[in-house]
Image (cartoon, rainbow, N blue to C red; front, side):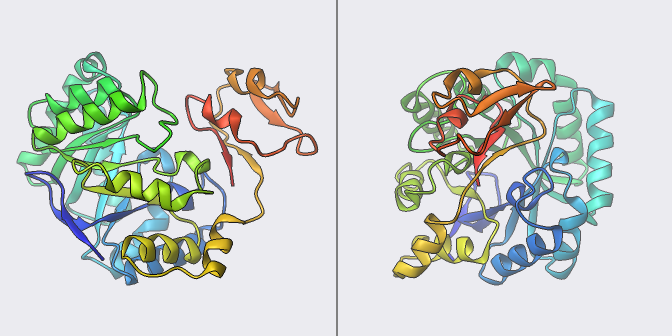
Length: 314
């Protein structure tokens, strides 16, 4: 497993971080126990850090694996805006994960200088937790170009977790080219960067090699969080990144799975997907998107316009 350092101040870790959203209750692809087994397998193959968040609701799922493998680092995230909320979030994370020290703690989905300003009290509390030795590295996750740029200039920030993929799917405030430039700017400031949504929320899994190669083509990106919900996905990603040959059978199992449109329960009913679907497969009901599977052709166009990645082909 290729090892990297997260910027000037972050730890040395495996190039691949296990993105645990894919095995969490929010995704619902597999059972909690099945998810644990996939995670254990990834750890055995050399993946030595896990990405999670309060909103994923999977601390109980991760804790046994962290206990078995104390060398594995943990990243978690919080939407806390006040000092009190941040301190409570850190304490609940420590207890639920069974860790006295949290390796990396991020303010979740920061959008710009203005949102960071609005979370100033939480940020100061996070820096305080770092100075106390409760948290080792601090930073933000973001889906925006302005979030990356603001994070790079945020005093005390170590790590940014930005959304980036070869089609620019999910970037909220500009083009892929602009996102890459922002990432390059942050990297030049010594910020550690690990990519999210490398496969575009599941919409780029037909071209996995292209997706992985694109992330590696940006030298300022140190690592990537990959959501993996099967042993086959772990084998494919680690083999490809390790330069090993991949059998046609394994590639077929990863890219030719039977798929369906999954709509997450955090859908806010914005209607963007309904307007985009030219096949009449989507509608709104009880404030959320609904799918008529008999009409859905799995084109994935709906997911491209969802601001919250609620729709995925799984």
